[in-house]
Image 1 (cartoon, rainbow, N blue to C red):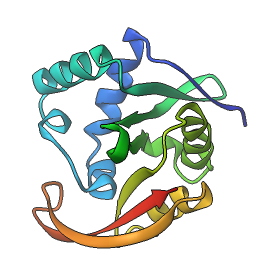
Image 2 (cartoon, rainbow, N blue to C red):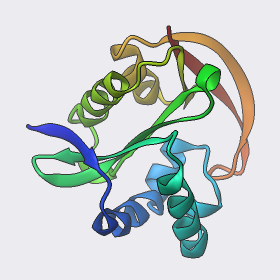
Image 3 (cartoon, rainbow, N blue to C red):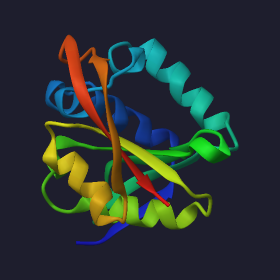
Length: 156
């Protein structure tokens, strides 16, 4: 399977909307925002992200098909990675390959990532890319309507 990243195109956004509104993806991602639930907020969010020159934003392709997105954002000492892969593409190593390529685009270190403590796969993806667990905290997870444990990972 060929996994690659490319610049985001307008036609990718309907795929991202479909993926981010998937209830199973929300449960897995845990930390959701207004843009996961409302198309107007979704459009505003993506316009803001796309216009921010400090954000590295890429569409993830699997054999030429839009599988999700990946990004690096935040100020220099707090750069964070995020990614979402559509459920139809889970379990095939796409997130790990995409994250590995994404971190190669960002020279600033450290990079940070968060994952739900009960989601071993979401912890394992950054670990395979060299991130190490550096802490834990609790946060409210709107998708689960409860407080959950978060794992913080860092790539130095």
